[in-house]
Length: 256
Ligand code: G
Ligand code: G
Ligand code: MN
Ligand code: NA
Image (cartoon, rainbow, N blue to C red):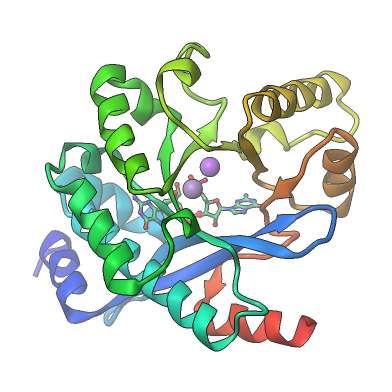
């Protein structure tokens, strides 16, 4: 079988795996949310990172089936976690949606199904779309997102600050969360201008009443700087790598 056929089979054969990366409240260092990141347990090549199969999935349209699997699995996982260990269960899970999902006519039904079948509350689910995707056709996108938001779920702009966007879309598109791209954090230490830029983005988001998650925190120094600049939520290898659900749960259970 070629790679496409094998990837198609992977979804049905149960070869996809859910990994979670923590999103931390920088003041308390507590895990408040998690981002769902998919892996493929390829029987021939072992555990595959998304970089090695998401591009093919996007080219072939398989991505909407993968994203649907991740959506359901993430909701189911959170519900089970909340029921069995409410003290350590994160408040929200975010899932990545590639562009093609916005062309799926029953996307809203798919999300409604994931909520209803898992039983999680809608405000515990965040849908991440990249800035570039959101900018494509603002009117169509805004309509789609309004429908989703009527379910009570939250919308995040992923890779914020990297698209060729004007800020005008923040007026037209209903969003709840900004995820500041990790390129803003690289070289933060010692670069005054970079720090001022991050500070300005944080202020912009907070003024608009949005939650701002800064990605790519890899060192304690970057975390300290982020706190000094007014950051509230952070994600990055320094705070936790993406890992299987069971290992994250075990880790959080021993901390508290
Ligand atoms: O985990 P890693 O850094 O290798 O992820 C690489 C890219 O794959 C990231 O841009 C991430 O957003 C994307 N990705 C990871 N999981 C999913 C998923 O479930 N759906 C989609 N559409 N993209 C994902
Ligand atoms: O595009 P998106 O923001 O969804 O991509 C998330 C990807 O970023 C994941 O694949 C994750 O593995 C990766 N990632 C998460 N934290 C860090 C980090 O601190 N440094 C780097 N280089 N990558 C990270
Ligand atoms: Mn993301
Ligand atoms: Na991002």
